[in-house]
Length: 443
Ligand code: ADP
Ligand code: MG
Image (cartoon, rainbow, N blue to C red; front, side):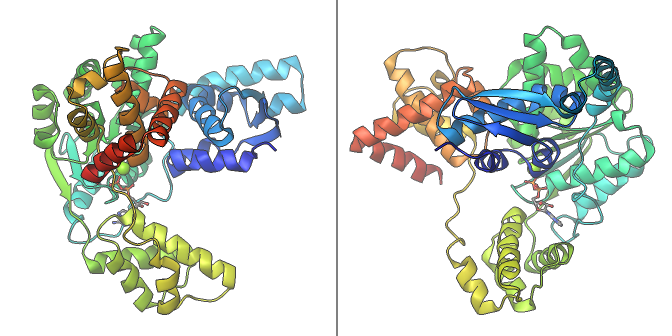
């Protein structure tokens, strides 16, 4: 029996942000799916161009994971051409797509992440006010605005909110939201395809650059250098830069000194974990948005169960919502305890790749940097398999990103490494124990 398209989509959903899932995977129609071929229909040529460049890899990886095989081919069909195969029409579409494509470099803002849906509390009011200020002003007030705080505290939400507001006064192509991860892979692909000047121009003509999770560029010399120039070009032209990070610049390891001082020259705004009242307010707001009935005691129960991560709060709320839609009744405190009881407290923590490299290197008596190298000696290869396995288990980084971190491997090689690590552990209980202890030390 072969895997269903739904299963593939589930795997995709685990690996991409909800907004990219909505924009780039939901609209796809599966035409047929066999053990060797997956035929999918994309709404337009423009969509296909974009998809091939940005999302096809994720789909290939997800297909490999969902089916357990690396050799399923993907055929992309364009809906318009599928319906009317006229040559003239196809030509039109292509011309149209050229204008669209440059605009498409503008962000796909998530409409759910706006100032209207953001609940302000003691921990985030400073960052919120700073974001409001930069989104309104024609010339930068604080440049850059550097927002930092732990996972799931609303950094991405605020960056999108700035983007929405900025779009009211600026052309779509002039406001760009991008994750550092995407910036890195765009740059790598620009280097590979020798179109760096196009890459540079794309960023340097912006009015707003909103870059998320900047900590990922740390330690990557070439990327840091390019970002430094992009930053300066925008800064010198009085264009607004908003940066988010999980840490304050001085605490980001391996960040170039000159970048660190640039990041610190504007306004640093931290986001602190929400207090209980803010968590309850957020839950109420989200419940209302999603038509979920949430009694007060249940709201407090959920708020108290989650330490700080608002994404976790939302996760628990959707379980409540799912329960309600299944049974058609509002949930009670007792039911909430049952429905949520298993989940609370046993979620793995997110860790950084650097921390993983350090632990694995320490365990195997080697230098963390050896794990990055492409060398194929056994003393490095084996720990590298383990490090890749651990990274996959403890983080939500994409396979290709993990590959770059460990000697520039592609996603299939990463999948193979994970399989090899699993086999090593299955064959050798002492290896299993070592890996478990690495994971324990990181968690
Ligand atoms: P981060 O980027 O800091 O990891 P996100 O911005 O992705 O966190 O936030 C995680 C989830 O929590 C998102 O769905 C976001 O909408 C929600 N969220 C975070 N802070 C707030 C807030 N103050 N009000 C409403 N929703 C919030
Ligand atoms: Mg984020």
